[in-house]
Amino acid sequence: MMLLGVLVHAAIVIPAVMATSTFESAFFAIFYALVHLFRMPVFFMISGIFAARILKTEGARAFLISRFKRIVSVFFTAAAIVAIFLWNTGCTWCSGTASRDYLNTGLIYLWFLYYLAIISHVALLVWLAVRWFKTRMLTASPTPNSSSVTSRRNRLRLRPVQVLAIGLLLGLIPGLTDQTGQVRVEMGWIPNLALLVFFGAFFAIGWLIDGDRDALLADIKSGTLINTVMAALLSLGSWLLMAQSAFTWQPFVQVLAVTFASFAVTGLFLRYLHTESAAVRYLADSSYWVYLFHAPVMYVTVFALSKTGLSPLVIAVLAITAALAVTLLTYHYLVRPTIIGRYLSGRRRPRRIRGLVETAQHSRASGGGN
Image (cartoon, rainbow, N blue to C red; front, side):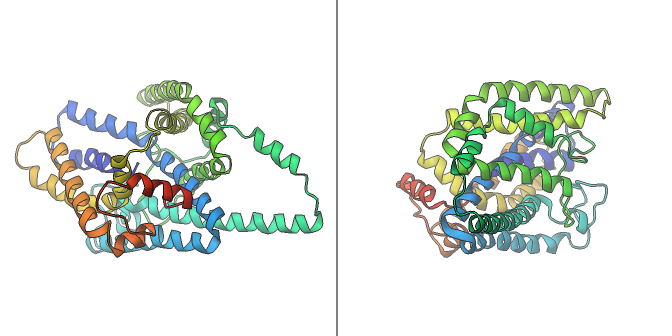
């Protein structure tokens, strides 16, 4: 999901800074819409899985340290760097709201880290409150009805019918979509309550998945086909409603499409890519660094090539290639085996790809980062 952000940003930046044909504009818009349909919900769901694992296996103190090192400190450091360039003007072309000043656009592509930091710490407070309540209940009643707890857990499923129920509930959240009919992106410092609830719900789903991982992931995997078909049909319906200016029902249908698409993509990965691969593990390890620092390389490349007369699609390929090459090289030599790598992930990793399967297995056993 992180690496897809590199492709998405090329689709956003190029039409904003150079002339594109009707076909090129449609290509970039459709690509963005397809990826945006599932990328952030899946990211928050995965984050919830790993956050729950860290908290349950290592405790609240380790959870806070992990969240500070991997999210909060990284976010504020990157935001401070961005502020140097946007403080006076804001983002003049990438506004996610009507206003384009720094307060409303200053986070640009870092916005989701801001929301993840908030949601993670709210989840910790809820976990502590629930644990305190359970302790009080056990004190008052030392013989809890364990069969009732087991029964409730056994009723928790994530089959397509439950996905539909989740989508129907999420569709009731007001103000989730923007003028394009898609789930909005808010790059400002004032959190959007609708987005906090929406992404918080996917984070909570991931948290619940960790509690019964085998059964719930099996549900998602078995429902892949139905979820995919529903996502496609609902996406088409949302587009038709938007084309007909039927704005009353379109946001509800779009949120349903997003919900089914998120579970469909998760199921597709579980079904077809759920095998150990050293190369994929390496890309997963590097994805955070790549995402954080791809933007300057990509933007400079796009601006430099925008006056050359090259096709925007060719420029997109060149900009993505340059961004990935620079960030992967810096990750490999300056981050992975260094103290920076230890800070971001909790351990240093060898430069060589060989042996990463063992690293991955150790990561899962210890409940490693997102």
